[in-house]
Image 1: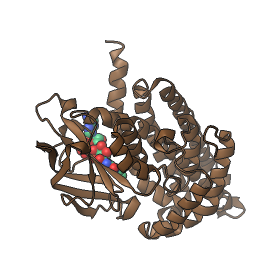
Image 2 (image 1 turned 180 degrees about the vertical axis):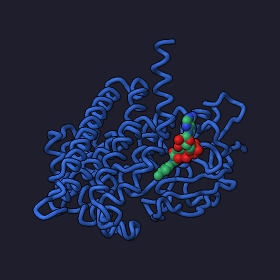
Image 3 (image 1 turned 180 degrees about the horizontal axis):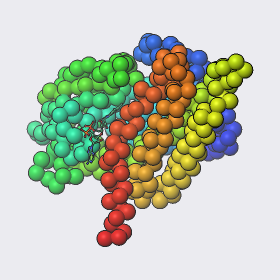
Image 4 (image 1 turned 90 degrees about the horizontal axis):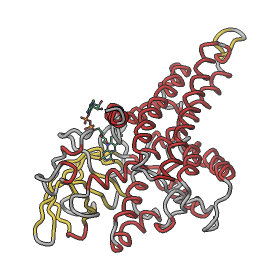
Length: 395
Ligand SMILES: Cc1cc2nc3c(=O)[nH]c(=O)nc-3n(C[C@H](O)[C@H](O)[C@H](O)COP(=O)(O)OP(=O)(O)OC[C@H]3O[C@@H](n4cnc5c(N)ncnc54)[C@H](O)[C@@H]3O)c2cc1C
């Protein structure tokens, strides 16, 4: 793709859809059996994507990406979200995309050279270590991991979990308290640490809803034991951890919503295909029942409303910045996560027993995406925050 021009978005989306249908959806059965074992195959697909000029579409050009505007990426992301490996194969997967944006925003020239460049090129993977098992992740100002300055180094001790993609990651961005006496939102800082650091102790890949995937699809538990990093490994100023976390989570939440739209769209395709094929009485298909027609219409409504909302918020955030779009981002985070659960539940129900098996796309999506209402802030916290901002206008 030319550096200064993108093809019209529908043309781009159609190319990506064709690639996903032809190259990635057929890999799903293998993926479900052993996601980590599929990585060499996925690596070959990633190489094809690079050759097609479709790599890292959403990342800023100065960071080595292709600078696709957010609302246009929403369209692309929906196509990629139709299969679990889509974003990974196109170099726009969480948590790497969020970490790349963060490094682009706050990294020093040396940090960008060492971490950002290989990350955007897809030569290494990363993870983000904020949540802890023993403190409430929904209120991360409570976090207890400590980074204590000793001369030209910080020494970090703590316990993290749900570090997505930590297994096989080359480096982590760690959130740790640098000043316990500072005001709550200035207590913590971010640090870059290699996972080869002797203080980075990999405990396990956590089984999540019956799956304990390794590699890119892992969620790991980590202990940080006297992990030493130079002062130059701090990302951004001391005390700026929460400020940076907000910068990372704003776009990250929109990215999740975009991907969920793709999962919804695929589920609806699968529901409709099943409904027109499955005979439930002589001469009568599932699709002939009004109840299933109602599910299809409700899915369509959930998808259309979510898509319109996500597009609107993406355009607003792009024009006015993520800070100005905070309330709207909070709204889509719980609204689209809820739509996703409803769409998947109707789709699974329409598949009957088949929907409970990994022979159907929906079983994986159902168990994997239940977490959508929890990660990057649970629904309840977003609702409280949205209501607080609305009420401010009345107080
Ligand atoms: C699949 C998955 C991937 C993840 N990936 C990462 C990652 O890569 N890096 C990382 O650092 N973290 C990650 N997380 C962690 C995630 O961000 C946290 O789970 C989330 O912030 C919630 O924190 P918690 O689990 O500690 O829940 P808690 O804070 O214990 O909250 C539990 C529940 O209490 C309720 N609740 C909490 N606060 C309130 C309130 N004020 N009012 C009303 N109800 C409330 C909510 O229903 C919430 O679900 C991941 C989680 C999952 C499930």
